[in-house]
Length: 436
Image 1 (cartoon, rainbow, N blue to C red):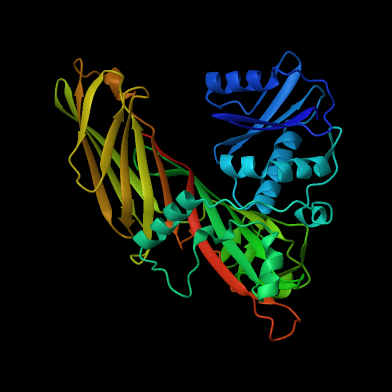
Image 2: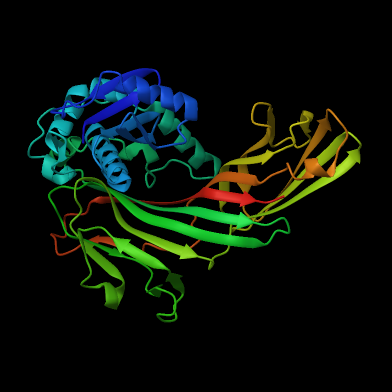
């Protein structure tokens, strides 16, 4: 590895502890120019024999450069681990946090990299070698946004509810919490959906990429027991069960002693954020949104684009931050929406009509109608320029796979040791499209 860099479009942070000295001062400028030209669509590229690999998170670019034949997968995996490492020690990843904790991040990189060679990226192991204290940064915007989603879908703040931003604190604060007697662990069951629907409303492809992520601020290092669905079956054709996943991978700290009998995992959680397990499910679940698009010609130069949406989840659940995008012909002059609860915008540069629905109740239907005026008479060629329609959404406290966390217990410990355990389910759209 020649150089490790952190960059923001408004400011450059170049960090190169003990680099190999085989890169020039123009390296940040070359990368910056590439991002502007490609809009960040190429994470791996090469210029003048120097290979670049980049990862974007929270408006920051993590950049890996080398002149050697290094696997792109290795470079991107290293950047992902560095981003997680910085979040564990700084609490929040944004430009202000990086600037204030520059010395701490430099010290972390100095321990992770030795003249371009990776030594280790474990948060737990680096605790013995990192001595700088983090400077706290309040990420109030992110906290307000996440709390807003919870309140809109009916989850009021009370003693049994914790803000989603509570995990945004450095692991160094765990020492202070130990002195106060407070011990916490946060568990997120997150699923990302990939769905393709044809013009007739039939599902062509559907897949769930799910994972259970934990953020540990526990006192000491207790052994935990995580119980999942008792009828869980891994692999198609391996038996009959209430829930079947195609495959599942586990974190290195997980022990499988009680897996076959009770579908329970034993592990000693490391400090900071880590993924306990990943799983994948394909073509064996009910998709949340059903989409039916229509295009009606009202006049030679006027069209009605109608999109019927139905949310097939229980009525006590909701979808939040729903964004529907539909590419339209280039000859469009204007687009108007008649639905009061949805905001509509026609983006001229991208030729895309966008609807925004802040709240969508489970079991309900929504008809989105956009009256489109063209600059020229409608032709069949224009019909092919519509679509595909894409959806972005969040389903708080709901998952499509029926994966459940039965319990999270401290195994063989003093009964007086009872840490706070916070569990959250959320489903996102990874790629949710419908052809027109």
